[in-house]
Length: 144
Image (cartoon, rainbow, N blue to C red):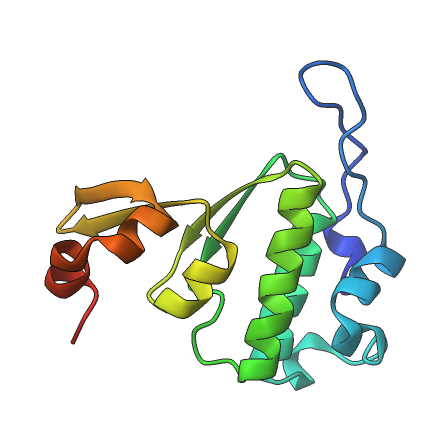
């Protein structure tokens, strides 16, 4: 029931080919914790499990674009790794993902491109590899 509330009809890519049509079973494979908690009310789940549930429910809508705002914030490292696996699986299926994230390590695991924002302005744009090579940008924006 936690997932079914987000269900939307299957979609097609602009070229007419079938887009991913997420089903609960596939989401339970992606998020094994949720599979074991199918009868658990969302309010009784941990913060990380609730975050997984939110993403899984979003995927039940079969979106072309997934917006993720700080998915690693406040969740256990094992859940962060599962989130990274989920994002990589989505990318492999052709979905576009816009990720807002302060955890640079997590962003490195899943991102192709990076934009560093400061006060609403783009201060850096490039690939993750380019960012890793740019000591000036890393020092200015990504260190404490």
